[in-house]
Image (tube, rainbow, N blue to C red; front, top):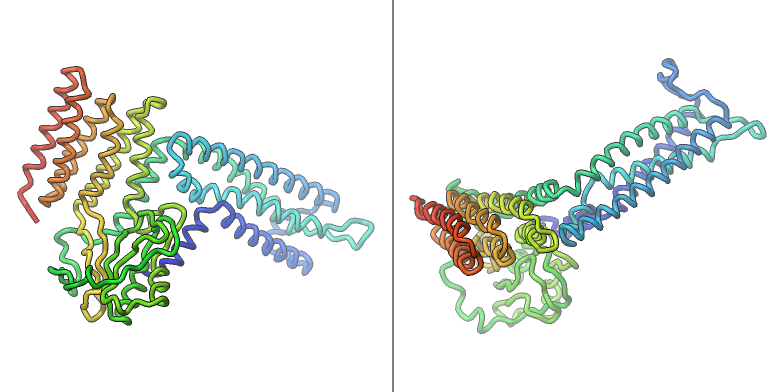
Length: 447
């Protein structure tokens, strides 16, 4: 994957509330100096013919600009306060892991940037207005643009009120996380089953090189953090230039402890201090997980929302069922995709990297385990999970994948028999279980 480190930098900037407002503030400064230059040159343009340009006195211009600037900084403070309240509410209701999704909301960033940019623009234009005691100068075109920016800011404020009220709704939050999950699936599992793939499809390695584990040297982590991404291109180039094979011990999303094993390099005699440092640079660690190369992260976010929804303090099974519906749709997409081969080759078709791949069984574990464990009193949630398994089964024709789904169907039924008291509820669960098993048995095409 290209530009991994650049992608991490962009992700950090995109998740901040200062980057977009700073860019917009810079644009406001440039706009102010441009408009003032036009005013000094006496080039008001064709808008003067329509009477749109400001024609008031210096005192009037000061009043207009002062009013706009004062109003904008006040509204910016109010908008920031509302944003903080929304973040606090989202953190308590949906979980702190979803704070990052709200921080990435471009709409809120643009709103804050618009108010700050308008304030800075009016402030810069205000300082150039001169009255009777000096050479009179009223930047008419600049004041007119300031008024237009104020009108635009009112429209942005209306948008912000609507956006803030809808962005914290459960369905909106779940939908946004689902979009991130779908994008991650398309990015990490681009190849659909049966589509043929490219002409230079790599062969699967039947045997690990002899002596790899016994003769390999361990590469230890030099720092701790969540593994956000692996620069595979750089790793392959390094392995080819130094002529070695590596077995990765972690995949993106896992927490790496300083001093723990990152990978094994074979032959071990090629490892030195410089190579150890270069291999550590291939792993991009951070304080939190991201969806850049970690499809499990988005699944865990939806699971967290579902688990919180069915907790005794909230008791909202409908939100949990919405999460299950979205998760089932995602697993349907995954079931139709080819999982990447764990073996990576260089341009000469030589084995260089053995990765730790994610599997369909692991994704189903991430999806169903915690929801099943925390849904003891919620029969509706258990029924919806069995219905989801039945839907996923219609898209799953791989023996191992269907076995993973059957395992979870059996686990849901088995725990329900121990925890559900009412016979009618048990009957409903049994009916959904039989439907799921029937769908899992009806697949004709095996891969």
